[in-house]
Length: 627
Image 1 (spheres, one colour):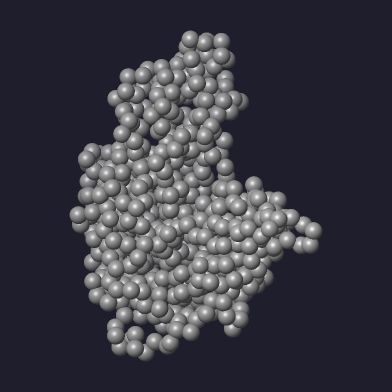
Image 2 (image 1 turned 180 degrees about the vertical axis):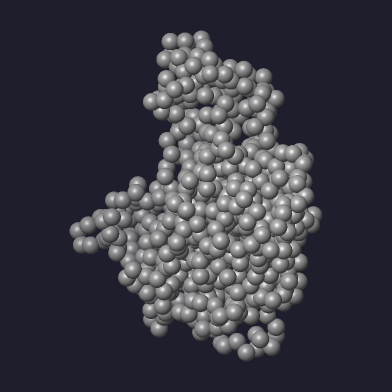
C-alpha cells in the first residue's frame, strides 16, 4: 500500500468559526473564512452513557489514497438500529470542534507588578441498503450490509480472523494480512465487526464522524488494532459524559508537574510533557485534563432557532446561505462540503477561491444587482439548486446530532476529558473506563504567578520568577523568540492542541510526572511510587468492573511513595529524546505477558466491553520511537 494512516484530526480549526461555546458571533462573516492550519493529530471519541446504553461519536481521521480507505471497529455486540433502520449514523464534526474549544487545557501566567519592569506582551498569551446477506461464506456471518452518508458498511461476525479478513478484502474493505491475529483475538470473544469504506463517488474529503449506540454500561477502547498503523506517541482523547467523573479502570493515572510546561508559549511543549509523564507511569496511563459537573460547564451544542423547514422553502441559494448564517449554523469542514455539494461552482469559476465565490453568494442582495456577485448567483442557479435535499442533509448530518447531544448533555451529571499518548509497542492493553462519584472536579485552566525581572536600565523583562500552584519557584530566561514570536505559536499562544506542543522540557522544572495514582470506582486516589509503576500496571490487567482494582494484600506490599518531581535525583532527559521519546530515567515497558486481548483486563472476560478506535487499510511500516 502506498497510503498510510495518519492519526490526524480534520485540519479545519477555522479562525472564522462560530464554535458553539454558547455560540459566539462569527468573526469574518461567512462559511468560507480563511483557515488556520492547526496540527491536531489525535484520535477522538466521545462516550455518552445514559439508561444502560452508550452512544459513541468517533472522529475518523485518514490521509491517503481514497480507494484504499477502510475502517474496522470491533464491538462487543451489534449496535442498536437508528430510527431509519441503519446500524450507524453519520455524526457532526461540530461536536469535536465544540469539545476542543471548551475542554482543552490552557496555561496562563498572572504577572505581578515589579516597578517599571514589565513582562513582554507575548508572554501574556494564554492557552487556550438492501436486506443483508446472512452468510458471507468461509464461516463469516454478514449481519448487515448497507450505506449511510459517504460510507458503505458491513456488520460481520465469525470465529476465524483469517476468514473475516478474507471477506473484508474480497468485498473491498481492504485489510493487510497482519490484521489477522488481532481480528482473531476479538473474534474468539464473539465480537461483531463494523467495517466502513467510502462509496465509489466519494473521497477522503467527504469523511465525517460516525455515531452508534450499544446496550452497555461501561466504555472500553480496544486499541490493539491501531498499533499496526500509528505514529509514535499518538495522542488519544476520550470524552465521557456520565453520571460521575470518569476514570481509567485498568490504566494508571498521572498528574503533570506544571514546572516542566513551557508557560511562555502557553504550553508549547505540552505533548512532550504528557508523553514523558505517561512513559514514567509505565506507558499505560491517562491524564484527566478536565472533569466538571455539566451544570458548572454549560455547553450549548445547538440553538433553538435552527429551523430546517424554513430553509427547505428557500429556492434561492443566496437566501439559503444568508438564512443559514443568520441561524448561526456552524461553519465546519463538514458544512463547507455540504455547501459545495448543493451550491455547485461551475468550471468557468474554477479559478475563483471558494471564499470569494460562496461569500459573494451569501452576501448578495438582489436589490443591488451591481454588487459584482450576481454572476456567481446566476451561475449557481443555472447549475441547479435543490433546497429540499440540502435542508434534509443539514437536518440529518448537523442539526439532529447536535440537538440530541445538547439534550443528553444537559441531562447528564459530569463531563470528563481523558488524554494519553501511546506508541505501537504500548498498545497492548485496551483501556476500560468507569466512574467514581467521590473524586473532585478538575479544571482545564491552569495559572501560575510570574514576577518580571529586568536587566539594569531595561524596562522589558528578560527573565521571570514563576511560582506554581504547589509552591515551587523557578526563575527562567525569556528568549527573544518568546518575546517577539507570539503570533507564531499555535492558536496565538495556545492551546497548542492535540498532536502538537512537542517542544523540549523546561530546564530546571524537574520531571514531567508529578503524581502517579490508581483511581478506582470509589474513594480517593491511591498514590503510587514511580518505582512500582510497572508492577502496578501488570496488576491492573486483572481489574474487574465493580470490584477494587488492587487487593489489600497487594497494596500492603507497595513501596512508600518517595517520588519528587523536583528532585535532582530524577534528572531530565535532554537532547533528541526531550521531544517525545521514552524517558530513560524511568522504566517504561510493561512486563512481558501483561497485555490483554480484546476489551478485557488480563485474562478476565469483561462483559461491559465496548468499542475500538479505528484500524484502517492505510498500513505502513511504522517507525518505532527511540527508547
